[in-house]
Each structure stands twice: as C-alpha cells, then as structure tokens.
Length: 112
Image 1 (tube, rainbow, N blue to C red):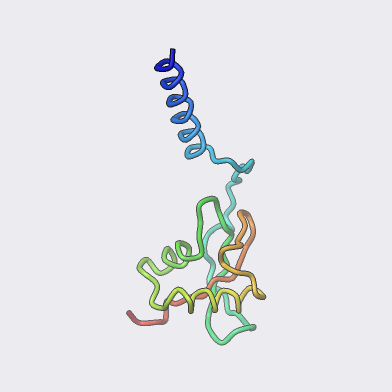
Image 2 (cartoon, rainbow, N blue to C red):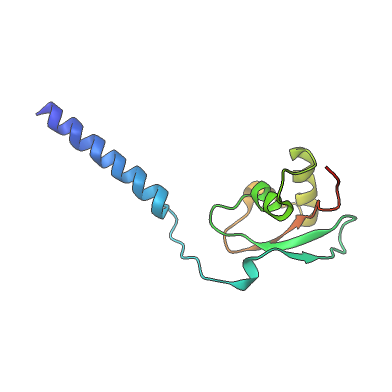
C-alpha cells in the first residue's frame, strides 16, 4: 500500500512539473502582435541609444538585449541595470511585465 501511494505521489509530482513548464502558472494568453519586435528608437531622455521592445513570456532584460545584439552584452550587468533604470524612470529590469513595452539600452555601437 505504501509503495502504491509513493508511486501515485511521484506520478502526480511529475505531471504537475510538466504542466507548469508547458503551460505556466500565469493566466496569460499571448496575442500575435507585430510590435513585439525590437524597434530602434532615438531616446531624448538619455545620452545613449535605445530601442523599444514589448515583453513576451520568458523574456528577461539580458535575453532581449542579447537577441538584439546577436552576441553577449559588451557591458557589465551592473551597467546594464543602471542604463535600464535610467531609460525607464527607475523601473528595475527584474520588475518587467509581460505585454508592456520598455526602453532597452542599445549597445550595438559598443565594439567587442
């Protein structure tokens, strides 16, 4: 009986993990939107270029910037956080929300 209960518990745990990874726990349906692509933009509020990007499920600030560059970022993480906060009125990159558009620093001019 204990073996049956343990097997049942393991199967439920595996299913819950599978469901969470494949469907997620947030109640969000992603709509196809052409504005979810990176669009270069001239930012008047800062001394460096930026681009706007509408955040999708699974995106992080680092991932978005690396996709724009097609390589690793040429600055430190601390500098990236500082630049992101400057472009977005103090919003931290950890606080980005799905479906909202943010300004991201454009490091394509930095040579590495």
